[in-house]
Image (cartoon, rainbow, N blue to C red):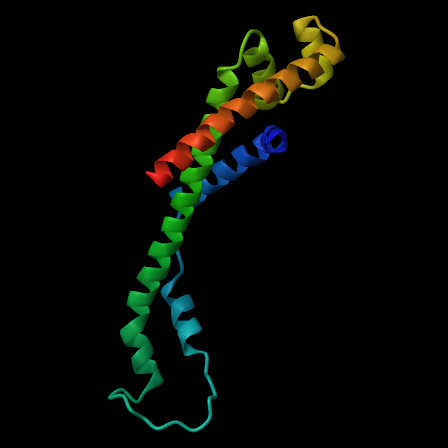
Length: 163
């Protein structure tokens, strides 16, 4: 599990950027346009000879009848997908930030500066008056504690799902 924690710590800035981009996409959501839907529906298909069975014989009329409904469905599904992805990302980042804050002793400050503040090990060792080696020990201890916090979280999720 510690590999998962290390990956989260390393990718924190990337996850924040992704969250910000998703929030921007949602705030400025336009969806697909009517022209794009009509164009996708109007692409000619050559399936061989066909016998007409519907009452509407004109391809353009079929498109006109269906495009609005299809466009709304596509836009609704896409917007829902973006919202769900943003919700999951927000929950993950909030849990990580809360978990960092609940570490023991000096670890919350050091790890917040390291992960959220993106401070280098040299800057951390200067700020906290410790060696780089000690920063490494703090990081290792923090990962162990985070590992146990994530383990508890995972067990709670499994228990909820199974109940």
